[in-house]
Amino acid sequence: MSTRTNQNGSTANVNRHILALALPTFGQLIAEPTFIIIDTAIVGHIGDAALAGLSIGSTIILTAVGLCIFLAYSTTAQVAHLLGAGRRREGLQAGIDGLWLALGIGVVLAVGLFAGAESLCRALGGHGEVLTQAVAYTRAIVLGAPGMLLVYAANGIFRGLQKVRITLIAAVSGAVLNTVLEVLFVIVFGWGITGSGAATLIAQWYMGLFLTVPAILWARADGASLRPRLEGIAAAGGDGLPLFVRTLAIRAAMVATVACAARMGTSVLAGFQAVNSCWNFAMNMLDSVGIAGQALVATALGAGGVAGRTRARRLTAATGRAGLATGALIGVGFAVIGLFAGHVFSPTPVVQLLVAAGMVTMGVFFPLQGWMMAIDGILIGARDYRYLAATCTATAAIYIALVVTLADAAAPTLPNDLARTVALWTLFNLVLMGGRGLFNGLRVRTDRWMR
Image 1 (cartoon, rainbow, N blue to C red):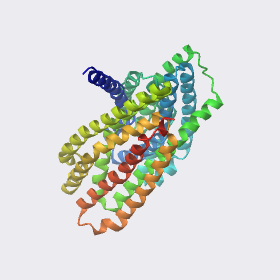
Image 2: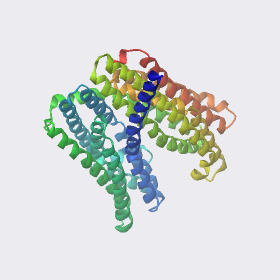
Image 3: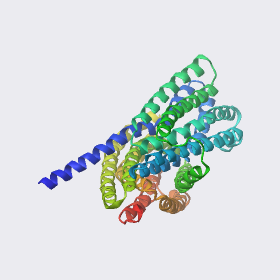
Image 4: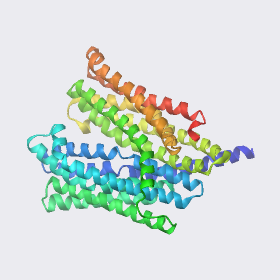
């Protein structure tokens, strides 16, 4: 009886830790999507060309910045490992190295995207007035890229220290600032879409400084050097490269899915876009559970020894259960909302039906996604980066081959757009999400990921 009580108490304590980290992390994760939603709401009042230009510009910035998410993941794992090993100063030093790497990548990204804005916007289909609007927005918002990448790296430091409330404060206050400036620049000053991009870049730099300043002060108080160290920056970049490959593989699979939905017809693509937008938002909830487990497991493994590995195993099981439960809960809500959400996205009955079919299909698979994302976070926390890069790349390659086959060969034989929509989302979940889940599950059954 006593042992069972202790086990239940330990489990409850672990669950509280996961929840305490996951909730603020979710708020932080939706910062960049929230900026784009605010931009969309304000710019929509300028005109159709401006809104279309925003769509192109936001795709460029979200893709570029999204590929740099490794800055947060690798910094979290490194800081948490060193903290667990009792090497706080070295952990904070690694965090400072991550900040310098983020700043360097951000500057290069901003310069490159600013110079290539017109070519990129044209490649994404912009022409005429839409192209003009897209280039104006892109050149304004990309100047905030260094600030946003500083946010990623600083978030990694605070997640590693398990002090994530400050990241939530930064996200909420940044969204409020962005909204106020959007209204001021676009509506009051009449700066148009450039004002929208300028408002977002200011908010991004505000968030970056809001998080970077206290991180620097804490690091300095613990004796860490604030000067750029080439060996430390190189080490941070080396850790991040496999995670970049992993993210690139996932992005490539998503781009292939969009392209294949487009081949299936306008109605299928319209329904896909609505479901995909809702899914991207919901996935942040699942990702927050994985990130919580990532920080806790990294700290446990950093402590080393049998006790550290035992705790890591217990945390892995608890995080997996939390991801499964969260996925099941979100899946039910996603499916139920999906039955009515089509009216929000389109006045066309056919598209409404496809939105409902897509969201119900996705809802069925959300428990799988929740568990997969949770274990994904665990392996990132264990710094098993090369395994994740290799398995994600293999899974994405198999999926891309199959989804192209579906679009070109199988889809024309299906009776209608409803069947095509269900087939597309089922393949997406079974192969891309299921494949990643299979590889992750096989890995955590061994001890190799803890070495």
